Length: 244
Image (tube, rainbow, N blue to C red; front, side, top):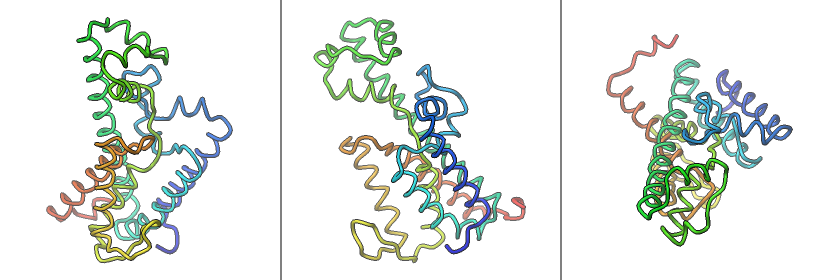
């Protein structure tokens, strides 16, 4: 930790500026820069990048930026700016990819269930594209299926959490014996146990759907891509000189 490194400092600044802007012009900026489901009319290609700088509320950005500073700083000191930024954005893109893939499954699973029940596909798409849905659908395929179907299409993803989870995995790889503490469990836990514990929590909540409003599969995607990059770099002894 300690003094801010260059990339971490600039990421913090950009995130804070985006957050201030959303407090002034929230609805329009969320529509432009959040990550929407690709079949939603609000989707734009740049959102796979810009959603990493959007946050839902003060506590959301506070925890993410603290983690970026606390875990990203030692990694940038070790890797250098270019390698750190490559890793950070790659993990964020991995998070967007898995999150979107899960939403694709949920959306088309629900859509197919409605079509199989005899409801016209074009009618369903027209209704949902207007930001609406028919309560009668719940009687046909069940409330849980409809909730997942609607949420996948209409709920945008925001936040640096996916990239941060990649950073957490890299930190656990590199500083495995460092002792960390969970806020709700103030007992020192080594990083090699702490980070997997967080990921297991996201897996549980993601598959059970018992904690809504959080893009758990984005967290898992960032962690997965972070793990794959760390594994590849370690296995191939990636040449740090290429990042200079």
